[in-house]
Length: 259
Image (cartoon, rainbow, N blue to C red; front, side, top):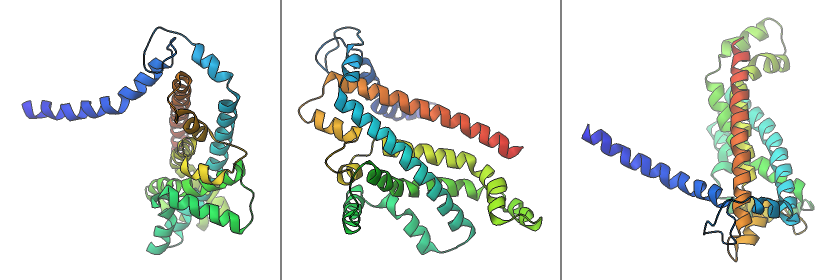
């Protein structure tokens, strides 16, 4: 019993280490003082200041556009990649190449994409970041969907083809309903990865526009402002909302797949 109780110490210490800074950030976002480190009373004024900061709002809009667009690209391509690797090939080389963007350093991938955009003479902007984040997140979506696909029953697909259904019909009506929880989980992962990704966006967005992580970086180089705490609290709320919605959609997808 003593040993088991001692094992709880590193567990709770890890939780405190991970979540205490988040709690402090949320509390300090309601600080009435001018300092980002000293709590002087409850106030919502920094949320008002944040709402009036056009640079932050523009960065937030760009980030949401990039996250939404890259999530669509990564989810579609990642799902197709997972199905192709699991059902139509057994090549370890292709498996390794498919997961390569997930293990490559962000800096290497960012420089490679920048050089590629230069070779094809693509003007940098929000859309170039959408493509870059889509490529980066596609590997994560493929890994999640493939894990879900490993638990799917292939006999249902065989029965569908035996009954005369074509490949597209079989995929849409048999395979995809079984993959909905994995697809939703992969999409959420792609969205959150794009939401706070900095290095790839910094290299591929150009000079005319900025995503929110780039804006935050430029703001905290000379110290953390209180409105940054408010911005962090808002992003935390967005992340929690996405997770809750994703869990709800996953349960609905599992229920439909069982039906």
